[in-house]
Length: 506
Image 1: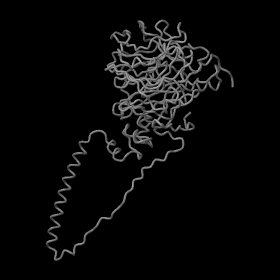
Image 2 (image 1 turned 45 degrees about the vertical axis):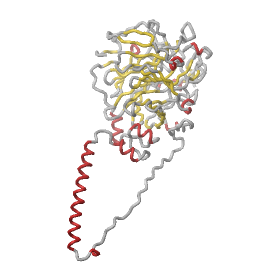
Image 3 (image 1 turned 30 degrees about the vertical axis):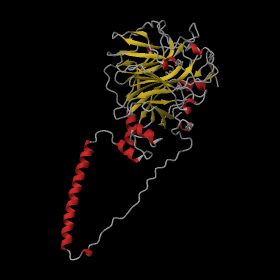
Image 4 (image 1 turned 90 degrees about the vertical axis):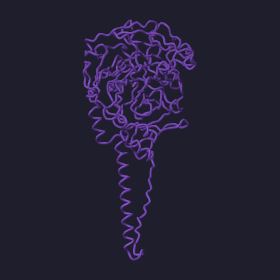
């Protein structure tokens, strides 16, 4: 990526798999040195000659520095945690500080031998969150709160950010609560790996319409912010194989790029006409400020022809994350990323925090200021950079105060000595005031609150909506054909795949 190119001139190399399975939907975990990445999860294509997935394994790809590399099975050793894992057919994943995470997912007969009992074309949810430390090669499988387990398998977004929290955070959205309704993005779920706690914060702004399987990337802003860009997505759950003209237009309109900016938890939408909707694709940040979209399928034509020609040449779309416009050219010398102007303008007018924090815990994670948090904690996180000037100023102020008191004492003693009687002096007493801080939070109706494991969440009211799998969730290109095989959409519960059909009039 050191040279600029256009999507009609760049050369795409095909690298042999050397025994690595040709899976749809694996989660990829890159190392921090960008010299290798690991693949876990996924399932055999619907067009594979067998319907039983191979033994559970993790594969590693190592680059050779010459535009290629090689695959090899990663030996997880005798660690019992890995031996007990199931391979999720579809799951969301992300990498944070050299640790890969894979969130829930679903078992299918095509993902692993132990799933033979799952009827072909249906899926059974896999609980928990799996992590793999690339440095120590340690695997862990942790439970998640029941109220999250009760939700449908995620088809929205999971993005990692090291801009907030003690050791970074996972930011999730699009946790569906119903099989036949696609995920909503009006509530953000947060996972803190440092203490394995879960939190929630409502989102505001131009909230994306319901969709599943978009792609997402995250970028650090230039003013202490973090932007998560989400592109595309589909909305085909529950269809009987036919779509109406109204649904066709709805799917076309899903050609949108949204940005969720933290710590404001506010959505913004890029302004461009819808013309090339994609879902089941992948996105990655390339160079300084561009997002590369690769492959995917057209949700408006999913039932007519799975292999409709990609609207981008060679399946490569380039999006400038600062100007929020599409292009056909990768610029290796692009300027560094800057937070989009519309996002900067909002922060300049409204400050760095949302109007209301959902809980003091979320506020502390994002270092925000609001009336809901603990007063002392809020004050300590409000100024988070260099405290040297404040300390020096405090010391100087204390010295000055002592000198002033000493001078007043000398003056008072001299005045007392010169007076004929002491009772002529009258003491002045400062008026006493009582300050009571009311820090009550009134929850609006249908407001999502941070939940404990024994409670269910409050559902956001979807009427105010302005009506991303993440970049790690990809449809793999076949080394033989160069075309991405279709991947069945997963809702996290057992169900049958929709049948093929066409467009019907209303």
